[in-house]
Length: 114
Length: 111
Image 1 (cartoon, rainbow over the protein chains, first blue to last red):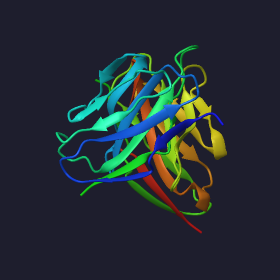
Image 2: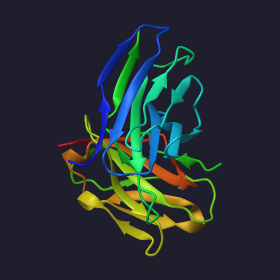
Image 3: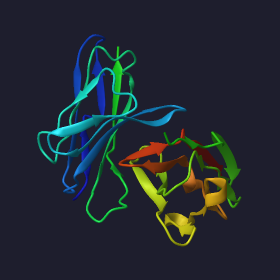
Image 4: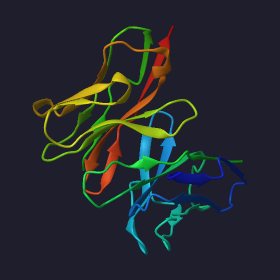
């Protein structure tokens, strides 16, 4: 099955710990994205990457870091510098060939920091 | 920078009622517009999209949206909702290589 997988579905961490969220896609998409979803705020872009070994900050990048060592993978690290890390995190990907392509989303990871 | 406004935060309807959810974006030029839906416990998925051509766009599950350039709007409509349409709906507009999302509208449909 082609798609985007995120693991784990639920994640609990103690305050002050870094945590890494996984995102893998087998759609052969070039671009990948990380969003944060909070009630009443929609989806806000954290980081995105259009090519391996390159990524750009989104609107709320502070306290987060990413890497893009492989086309299929775009892990997100929530660092201890993120002031309010408890949220639902969504990963998405998009094919860039052919233009005008929509983003496809993974099932999300709900992070709770205790 | 581009921004998106969804005016209805929470909509409650009875089955068979008609639905219209508002979406406005901040500036013109060439835009690509999207409506995504998030059913309870499911992935965010695409309902419909507009890139060019006919401003009335048909999507899945009987949804449609109309792009009105002069009003910077892309409202979502469905003539007769069902209980299974209960979900959160997000409007989005492209901004170069990113998508800008609205804050979402929570739709509850009662039998």
